[in-house]
Length: 89
Image (cartoon, rainbow, N blue to C red; front, side, top):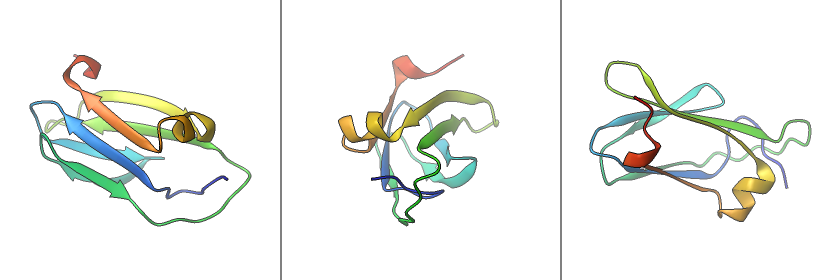
């Protein structure tokens, strides 16, 4: 199963700072430390199965970036957890 620009990806923030989350360059929202958000609008599309997920800090710096494929997201139950150890400085 493949999804379009919006997919039911749950992103959790286990860092000590608020993060602004982007999926496929679309702003999903700001997640406070210890909280999660889900991009829940589902649109089917079989032409693109890549989901770049980025997190920016309060100053706009990209501190997390990973391009997931749908198979990888399936294997982690469409849950992305950003931990302190993932943060790029």
